[in-house]
Every structure is written in C-alpha cells, then in structure tokens.
Image (cartoon, rainbow, N blue to C red; front, side, top):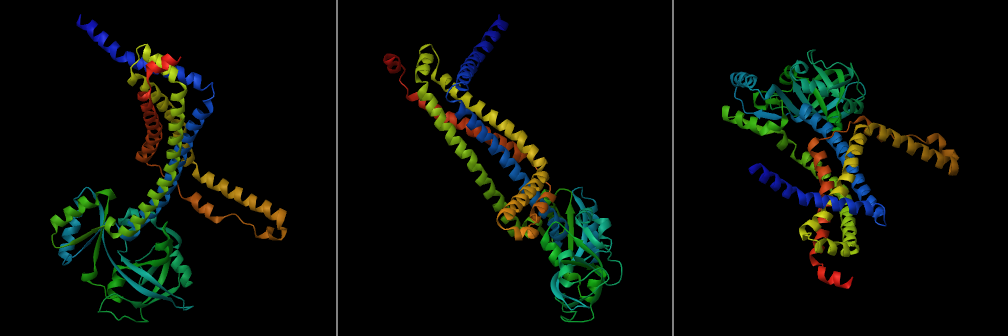
Length: 444
C-alpha cells in the first residue's frame, strides 16, 4: 500500500512537468516552422555569438594580464617582501623558519636602488633600477629562472663586477655582452659617494621578460658588488619570499608577523596596487562592453515572447479552460526561453573554447587579411606605395601570447547566456496573469 502511495505521489509531481514540456515542445515545433522561426533562430544566434565572443575576449585578456603579472611577481615585486630583520642571526632564523613552511617556496635577500648607467665606449646614459641578488639565484628561485629569457650571454653574477641588463635598457645604452658599464650616480647609502667613475661593471648577459617595463629599467648585480661598491648595508636589505600559491600571501604574511614581530611585511597586492587596479578596471570595462550583447539579445527575446503571448492568447485561454494552471502556462513559455538559451549558449561555449585555443591562428589570419587588403588597395589606387606595404607586427605579438581560459569565468559566461534568456521569458510570462480567460473565450 505504501509503495503504491509513493508511486502515485511521484507520478503526481512529475505530471505537471511532463505537461509543461509536452506543450512547450508542441509550441516550439510550430514556431520553428511558422513566421516566428526567424526570431527564434536570431535569438539563439545572438546568445551563441555573445558567449563565443565573451569567452574569446576574456581568454585573450587573461593571457596578456597573466603574462605581465607573472613577470612582475617572479622578477620585480615577489610575493612577500620582508624588512626589519636586525642581524645575520635573525636572517638565518628566518631562513630556517621558511624552510619549515609548506606554503613557502624560497626566500632570498636582495638590495634595490636606482642609478645612472653610462656605457663606457659610447657614453650613452640611462637611468635604471639596480637589483642586487645572490649569485646562485637561478638555482634557488625556479620562477625567476623561468621568466628570464636570455637574449645573449649568460645570467652570471659570480664574476667580479658582473652586470646583467634588460634588453631594452641594453639597446638604449648601446651595450652588449662584454661592454663596460659605469654606475655613475647611485642612491645606495651615505657610505658610498653619490657620484663616482670607479663603479665599473662588465656586461655578462642581456635578458628579456614578458613585461616591457622590466626590460627597459632593470639590471642585476651581485650582493657582494652592491655592498662593496654601492655601500648597501643591513638597513636596506630586504628578504624576498616566494610562495607555492601567490593567493596565500595574506595568510603567510600574518604568520611571518606572528613569528617575527619586529619585521615589516608587504604583499604583492599592496606593492602593485595601482597597476593591478588598472588591469582590473580594464578587464571589467571590457566585460561590460561585451555583456551589452546579452542585454540587447535579452530585450529582443522579451519582445518576441510578449508578441508570442499576444498571438497565442486564444491557445492560452483554451489551456486554462481545460484545467491548466496559470503557473503551468507561464512555465511553458519559461521553458521556451530556457531552450532558446541552451540552444544558443551550448554552441557558443564550444565555439568560444575552440576560438580561444586557436587564437594565435586567428591573429595570424587577421594579419594576412589586413596585409592583402592594404596591398590590393595600394595596387588599385597608389601603386608607388606597394614597396612599403608590410604586415602589422602587432598581430605577431598578440599571436605569441597564449590565451588563458579560467573555468570559473567560462561557466559564469555560459550561465549568464542561459539565464538572460530565461529571465526575459519569465518577465514576459507575467503578462499571462493579465489575460482574462472568460473574455477571450466569449470573444471567440
């Protein structure tokens, strides 16, 4: 008896859903054959292109931003900077503490100052950020080693007075491997003169990273050279902490502060607040602009559903007269909106992922298309300009940066595409409440 009651209850719960989807399927079959077929297909296409465009654009934006962020975190700002350790014993105790922490990858001392670099042969000068690191930094810091792309020479700080220059900085100085660089002016400390022609370094390597500002401003020397020639001492010494997960910087900083109360800590979010804030605003504005596609599509779906409800007011009246509840009739049109959203968002999801995976080919194809268009225009109207037609090098730069998809963003974009259609149909379905069934049947 109880089994029969459970079966009846389950059947009673599923019956309205079967009825809703059966009526909705019948309506869809008629709509895709009738005059509303174009509207339905355009709504699905709008959602598909919106989802595809938003996934591709956000993936490309993530690729560019992550290239910059990783270069900054691994080379420039590190994950956490620690200052205020009193002596070598405190520094040794801090290093021992870091080795016992599972979240800490490595901890390195460094000095940083600014100076005026002069190339000894040609006399070209350029201001630069001088970063002093341990000579074995490549062996101790895997992230730093990964971001360092050597253009020429070697990243060798063990030689006497060795210096490694960024690629743009070396070009500005006219320097190459073997050139002599004089740090003519330095803001090291009061123990070293501000101006001195005796601080001569030999270039052992030229590097580049994915962030142009590092290439144009940074050079690296050894800790020993900084202490000996630039007067850097304990007061200006900083400990750079690298984490296995950069998002845990706040947690590790709190642990460092608890274990070493006298020190000061600064995480990468605070160190680069202005830059990362600008990136966030840029990304949000771009997302808002693409989301306008969904808003336009949602308004079109709302208008189409309102027109459909008006055209089917007699059918709605008949369904209500036969015992269909208003909530069930509303659910019929909501189901149509859900189907419209799914038929648009699913293809858009697949196309967006495929487009993001092959974005390098897209940029190369756009480069070729622009080149041939310019070539054809020059050949028709200005043949004398044909030797000067070139491909846009920026497309090659864009193609070299891999697009990066984030699962959370992709899922949010897909759900937004589906929910925008569903919300439009739900708002339009509320007009059913205003229909008077008895008046409609009497008029018929």
